[in-house]
Length: 132
Image (tube, rainbow, N blue to C red):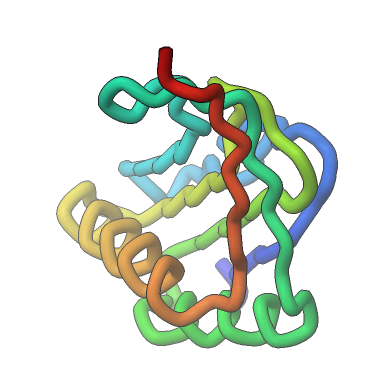
């Protein structure tokens, strides 16, 4: 398969089923996904919503760089992060990795989410209910 890294920031719901279908290939025996969702409860604090903002040009560039660090000719990578206001249970980030074997797919997916959180300029602002 040819070079395949797909990254995006979007303000609409991520169609995870569609993204998984795009990763399928007769040459890849493993598809590993990570769905980062908005948690409704953090300890005793209830989240009402989270608003994500990004330095979009730099975020896209860094998402590509992170993906290129682990991409090989026989893998495919999709990284999508939402921007805008999300409700609890919404998917905020989707990472999909297709590879010939599961171990490689898991390692790539783990690297991408760990580096994404550290290097990509995406910020979140939580709106929480007050404690009673």
